[in-house]
Image (cartoon, rainbow, N blue to C red; front, side, top):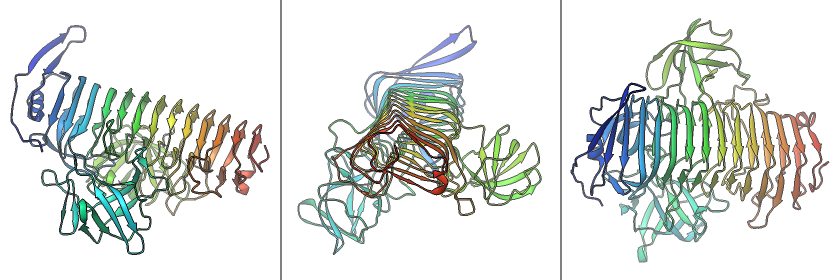
Length: 607
């Protein structure tokens, strides 16, 4: 445990005048100091009058405690809202630059490391982030008795914080905080530091936990799916509390550049962008330290982009060991609560982790999506926004609302959608999907190395539960290498397109459009390669598929290609090396305009 300290040092401040642009930039050089650096940072950032600021760090290992952090109530999409302890808070700057010079930042307890709000330019380079104690409980599975309903675990102790009290494991027991339950729990392969083959997510709430010999704990709990003996079982707490904050949170800003950043742990996502324009993430890494016994890096996604616009580029990055997706690019659906007059509507945010999200601003173009069709239909421009609370907002539009608009219809922000490029990245050994895509703008996924627990490339716009929009219209997935994918207990595919719409929407109407899956190399143990529902225009061309024997098949009867309610699917010049005979499943509607030509090695399929 790091002792609290209040040590301040002389900061070297330099005001640099830029005669050409007529602004003053404050440069703050921060030399290394033993002990808590949080009050040093607060002193450095206090009462800055300049609109441009630059922080320069020595190459050293710095410690940051929550005691003297800035506190602010923060709405963070896909996380828990609340009063956050923020170490680096930047608001309303024209430019922020952080030069890390290879410095290492070690955080302790519940802290939000970086928040950038309403900034015109942000550049962060050459930093490593980690926590002294992870917000995790993990241990080796020694024995399982499914009939009696218990499992024996040898908990990890060095570098972890937990205690057994009144028959319950309490963790992380840091600064008075502990999760009310083990909560979200998953089994990992200790050799590869990835989710165990065929594992299922579970929520753990043992009836009681008892101390056994030699530090072993016996968890009395009936489970649908028991972890394999020898696996490492990891818990991250309950869903209401286990996403405190991302390492980097950027909101209502633009021109963001992250380069040379490594994140070994975070209490939420790695990089989260909300309503932000133009983002570049280069040569960054998210993974546990070499030689560490931890199996989890970030508690949630490596990168996440919600209602962004402009150009997003993620290049030359390595993302591993996260407990959620490599990236998720999406907008947000809001639901019509009530029509107030012929120009005004009250809308509601629907998912509890979206509360307080800024759906629209004045001048934004909005699509209206009216039941039962999921199509983007009428458009209108917002002229006034009145936020009632964290759930409800009133929007007034330039033109009359479309005829027939009613409660339960949804709105989507047309203005805030980005182009997205991911290139030369490695994403593997983590929970969930490699890439989740939900933007109608141009999307390119190329020259990456992918290995996924669930589907590798996942399309799921949904007017239900997460309410993440929306339908894609221009996607190229090319020259990627997929190896050992879809090893979750739940059935997935390499490329999985599966809209999830509410019960009032037409479940057969076309949704996603113009997806090209070209010249990829696929090596995997199971059968499903492409599984698509409600796609208009899907080209599967020039791919090399090899079925491997390095792991047992989880769904041996599943088809290689599966199409439902699709239009204009083309399977051209692909090759298959394997012995699976269930090659193609396609419903009558999809068959009408299905084209097969020049394919090799597929048993039982018209080549």
